[in-house]
Length: 327
Ligand code: UT7
Picture 1 (cartoon, rainbow, N blue to C red):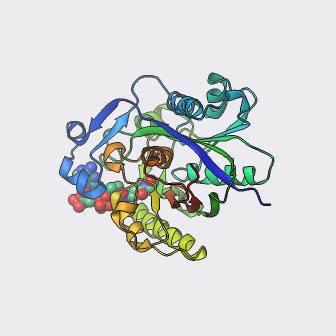
Picture 2 (cartoon, rainbow, N blue to C red):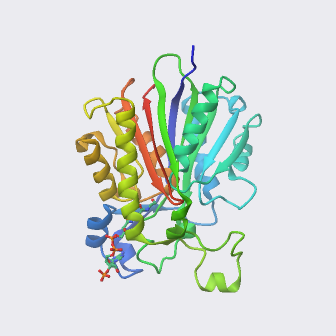
């Protein structure tokens, strides 16, 4: 019999500090009305101090292991999706495993911008389905405040910090991962990226003074591509699996902009109450948005619910997963 993978536990961590639209308006030329109407965001969380994504990942995974009564030594693999790793190398995943005593796990980071968690989830599902692995942790999170220019009102208002994690195991019934469609198109790379800090433009006095280590985004261009891609791929996975709007219980979309979420929902023919939306509280936490939503909604999901998860991000990268909730 074919092995099916399932999410067996979910947890998340967001830092305490709340950066409101009103506080941002004291830093750049913006206002609550503009941010709310253009993005749906009211506030976002910020991780203060010299703490990296590993700090949030450690909290999210610790809670995950505790709530699922999992011995850290039983974890075989940890994949951490992030664009704000503690260091260029080693992988932050290695650091998280060490701190939490997951000494039998191999681990690595994945960078697929905002689609990284979705891509990692699918990879983990295929590894479980292969029969070789029984316990994989997939983490998604970012400390976006570490790569933002708080003088650029077009980007600093969008992003926030946060992290979530899921435990993946073989399913014991028909629930779990059913299907996925994953895509990337590198011709979009120049429209949304972090110019400096990589091998093309290592850190220099110029790169720092010119703020090249911060997110560069052509907002309108990315918006158009994101709306089309996320809506299309979400509709495509429904068609591929003969799902009508009535069959879909939940859409869990990447939280980049409320208008992108609404366009995707409308394309799928879903009512608002079937969509997980918390962008107003956290903004775009990049790899954190989807696992944070899964954690916040876990009490409302029912076993067997048909869930579509979809994302769009830099790269460009995008995709959708269809699963039946198994907890
Ligand atoms: O998760 C990864 C993928 N990323 C995305 O999906 C993000 C996609 N893009 C977006 O969400 C939107 O394009 C933004 C939220 C970034 C911008 O919204 P927009 O409706 O596309 O605004 P715009 O860039 O067309 O700017 C409209 C106006 C401009 O002024 P003028 O030229 O019309 O006078 C901007 O200068 O709004 C101005 N503006 C602002 N005004 C107040 C830009 N940012 C701000 C701001 N506050 N923060």
